Image (cartoon, rainbow over all chains, first blue to last red; front, side, top):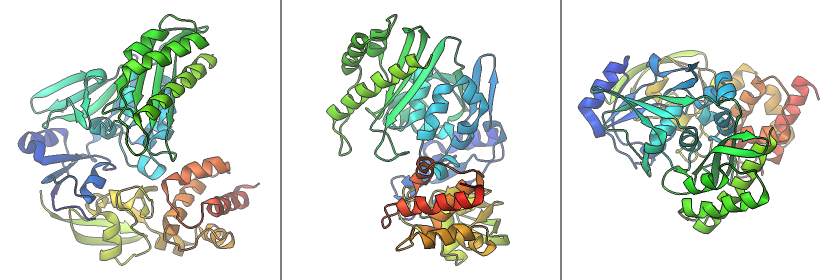
Amino acid sequence: MKAPRFAYIRPESLDEVLELLAEHGEEARILAGGQSLMPTLNMRLSRPRLLIDINRIEELKGISFEDGTVRIGALARHAEVMDSPVVAEHLPMIAEAMPHVAHVAIRNRGTFGGSIALADPAAELPACAVALGAEFVLASARGRRSVAARSFFNGLYETERGDDELLIETRIPAIEPGYRSSFMELARRHGDFALAGVCCHAKVDGNVLSDVRLAFFGSEDRPRFADAASAAAEGKAWSDDVKDAVKEALGGDLDPIGNFHASAATRLHLARVLTGRAIDRMVAAG
Amino acid sequence: MDEFADIELTVNGEKIAKRVEARQHLVDFLRIELGLTGSHLGCEHGVCGACTVKVDGSIVRGCLMLAIQADGADVWTIEGVSDSGEIEDLQEAFINRNALQCGYCTPGMLLTAAEMLEAGRKMTRAEIREFLSGNYCRCTGYHAIVDAVETTMESRFGG
């Protein structure tokens, strides 16, 4: 189908974007990579009166590292994140996740900030942000604020971002010495949305895990931090018994939503299997 | 802030200036306004890859980018890339390997394969499949397409 009619504006400065958002609020949509917005327009699931194209705002671009934190500008394209030496060195989980994010032509255009702000529950990057303790910086004409990833996602495509706010960057703590990450997902076709996916991050000393952080996607209406499963591995030497305990605990963390792609029971089973494999690999990587 | 805008861009090396409707996506612009019907529309929501075009050096989904966003861009379609001869060997390999039947996906497949060839190295069949994973083909079962890309890589970069 064809998109409905809308007005379009391409501001040259961040201030101009924020003024427009303050004025138009929920009647406007921000157009970054457009890889999720455009399908909803073409299918007429969305009928904004105004598209605000932020693609030429320089300060939203780029990836940098400073004081132990990686800053990923909202407009950093997936392809750019995937090829970034900064990400490869400091955020190995994200580097591992990137090849699973859609397909080449979509990665050339889709943005990091767009994926976070959209909050698709089957998307990789929101879950990575939750596991890694990322912070999202939101700007509006009222000022700026920072929101922790774990309290940002409220539900299906629902976030803490207000209608007059723009996600301008993501700040993610760089991996510390002794820590390791592991990322795994299952999808029907490579690059399609996940049936189950896990992000693991922990300090690994020999085979003893601490500061364990497990986050899941493709399960329910938002990325889910698995408190019980993470706690089940905390301070433990990784073994078959601990693996069983983590998988068991995961049943208390996740409440998957079944659909025609996979039932709730199948999704929970897949999440459990992936978790075992992902931690196996993380421990073996040393 | 308007539902129409004047844009200037380069398409297949030729400078174009047009007034476009904001809601028109790039492939409709290429097909309807410029008569370049080599770029196809399959699903029109970013799943099938038939609309693949090259914008500022990288392949994109032509149905997921507005024409108005291509203001100032350098756009290449299958027509331009065919005429330049830069993928003649790839096209020959597609024919030799029967890597198409109906041909609907072929322009997108060729442009995606061309981006793979730009990496300048031979890839494994698994890498080729992964790279092509965003392009649907409902005729060939992909095997022949992977063959054609692999053959072209072998002849360009050695076995």
